[in-house]
Length: 107
Image 1 (cartoon, helix red, strand yellow):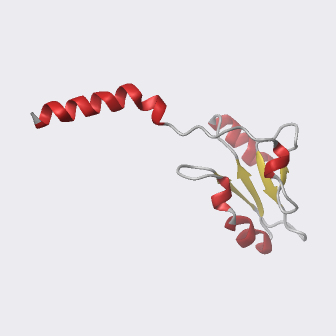
Image 2 (image 1 turned 30 degrees about the horizontal axis):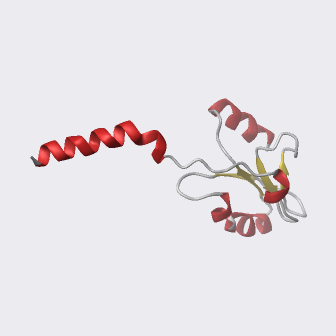
């Protein structure tokens, strides 16, 4: 009996797994940028937000959204890294690895 209930539950999860995924709503670029974070690489080709140091740059950090949570939950990264001279790119999503490599090289 326990095995049958377990198999039924597992089958239900497998059938409904697409409905269990969290898909965030699309937002306008103007809603996610601020004085500290500008669109990256541009508002027209928006793939994330960037915070840049005022002086010389000594490297770059690319932060991915990941799960669970959203990019807003990673707000501490720019505050910690920019004073050290690092550009912080907060990437909205990963479409494919080729795009990630291209974005990393552009950073």
